[in-house]
Image 1 (cartoon, rainbow, N blue to C red):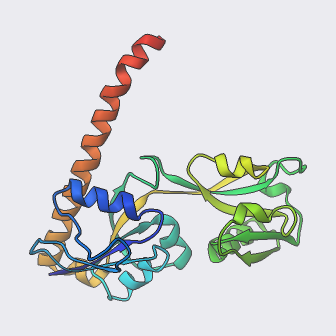
Image 2: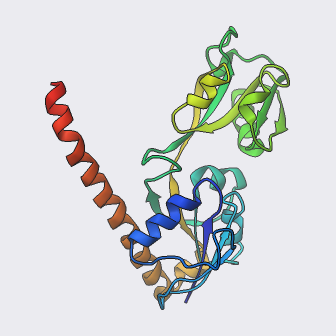
Length: 233
């Protein structure tokens, strides 16, 4: 019934583990295969592709349903229906943040401090451009293909990068001066597919299964932390 696209890369392992825990495991011929199957009548086809491509593929109707980050939905400006947040990321249950970071020894302490003509490296050029346009700051934005934090200050003045903990940015000698966007993983749907009652019902069932696993994980985490909290207090 549904065609499903899941994220390859940093979210891949966590996503496949989530589906397995929800009793809808994805089976593949190998760990690097882009095609998969789910033994469930609601899911007809499964592909595993880069998360930055998923919003457009879903918006264009190539897939009915997909998992990607809010960051890529905003970056691509894709017209998709969000069924809701799935509160997990690469390493934690916390959202990722898209941040503006500058060299730790720079005099800039806020986004508004940056000068006209500032040079920025980012994997999110469209979103970054809109951010600086809204501030009224002319920015030269260079598309980054990875290791963005390594490019300031030798190549650019600042970076726009995603982070869960900020550790990699600090290790690179950078400080965060602004959070542009907070992004959870989301389950997104093609608008036309979502408008079909039968497909919509199947989508909502899958969403409920995934959320049930995440909710259970959250309760277990709280129970595990309670004894420690009592000792501390």
